[in-house]
Image (cartoon, rainbow, N blue to C red):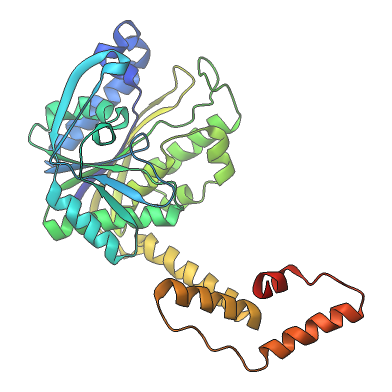
Length: 348
């Protein structure tokens, strides 16, 4: 039921009430956003799910705003107009339920206040989309500082929840690209900036999911981007689907990359089940690592796992203490007074 995925930038300057005399410098981005609004309206989504890097961001979980009404303004940028949306609480609850079944940590923000206000990562793209989608509801998810496979898995859960609810859903990754393209950027210049933007937009235009997931972490960090994780979450919502990708625009008038793209799923494609492939590869990696564990490491790991899951503690091998004692004695005979670190960790 995910009918469209998209990338949209969020510089407040592209909003007329904020940009004013500077709007001509972001004409390409504004035109691309207008084209995105037309394409999204053609799919008639009932709900828009937005992943924002400027909302409630945590290092260990994902947060979804669960207040009945969603609202906010760009007042701090000079536009006091308030945007108001109805939250799709049924879809919010379904996402939390499916995510919990998948073992993801998801928190719902059910009270109002500043933390529940829509941030510019949501408000800027929706200022273009709202006129074309007056009846659509909204779901807002804060980006998480989590491993990419985890974020991709969350995107899969969004798609599964949309299907469970029978909800036609558009998924929007809000994010600017590199902030280090030089020019007027307050973040300066780094050669990684243009390289990151070039590589990401090329891969996105080909819907090359594994290529995007394989972008080196140090390249993304040096580029100073803020949309990469949102994009990964959006791509997860299209997992297992054939995709037609189209780049609608890219420019960097102020030394910060603004990219607009749409990805339209066209039907099932078992060859694009990248989530399953990543999880299988990770399980195989864990299996091989455990095959080579020493008995000491295995005991420590199984003990921690038992404590974390409430299972009974593993039985200590009968000869383990004797083996520890022999190893320590041998090291003392050889004149090594301090035992190796792994013995300190296990024995104190």
